Length: 149
Image (cartoon, rainbow, N blue to C red):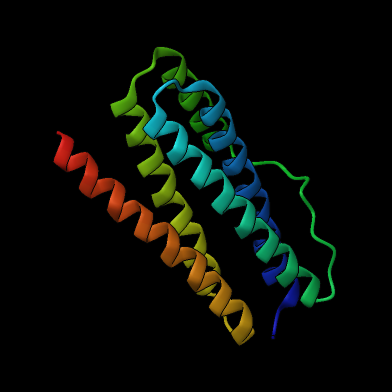
């Protein structure tokens, strides 16, 4: 690994992002009334929790301590506020659209990390597995949303 600090910074950034998205899903789970959405958000929160565990493990494998403190972009703060507003308004269609957008942003973050040169193979496999899982959920969400619309 040529630049472990850069990789570790991106990994920690992804860990913070994963943790924040998990909090959004938990908040959504606690706020929505629709049973199907409750199940969906509970599953997504659990998935993110597992992703976070795997990322912490990978960071520890690189002899670093995972950090959950950090600042997210203003754009992410706006995303979180949009989620809260849509939950309060009980606007399911727009809420699912925001989930879709969040998943697109997540995939971009994974791809960014995967473009780093000389990533350890185990780390690549973990990142690819998580990214592919997010993509699969995104495709399912897109298909179901198109079916309902």
